Image (cartoon, rainbow, N blue to C red; front, side, top):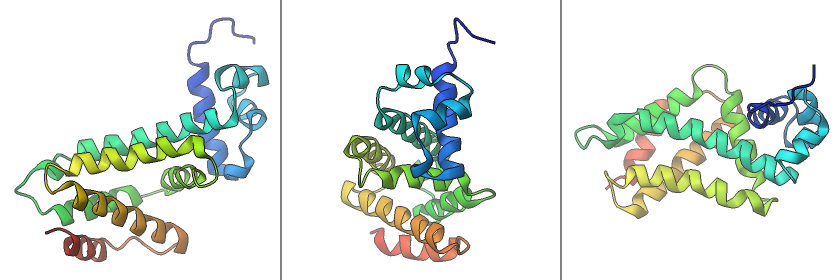
Length: 178
């Protein structure tokens, strides 16, 4: 059934793009595959997203927002009375609890910025926002180092398929915190 007024169509296309990346990887994402997954005409994807990079930017931004909400919800990260290394390690544990698909998709889109310059500012938004959250607890340089370390630990777990080791993460994060 054709929809004349479909205010949710853009969002459905973004959600579909994320599902395509989850199922087929970045290489499987196209306007056509997103349209098919969202069950919309191909013209709808090109109307809302002129280029494939535009669609990837929207998908990465949505993935970033999901992780930003998890950081914002963890109030202990801002509490000077808590162990920052332990809180960051626990946050990583939260991300790896259950299905890793969301985390894999986010990192796949994040790493696509290596070859797609249009994605770089959005990839950088996540790291900067996470570091900004941590600057209430430490200096800006250490905050950026902690974000880089969390990213590195997450990538290693995803790439090797090993279980996330919260104790290890806590130990190495504590070594960076003055």
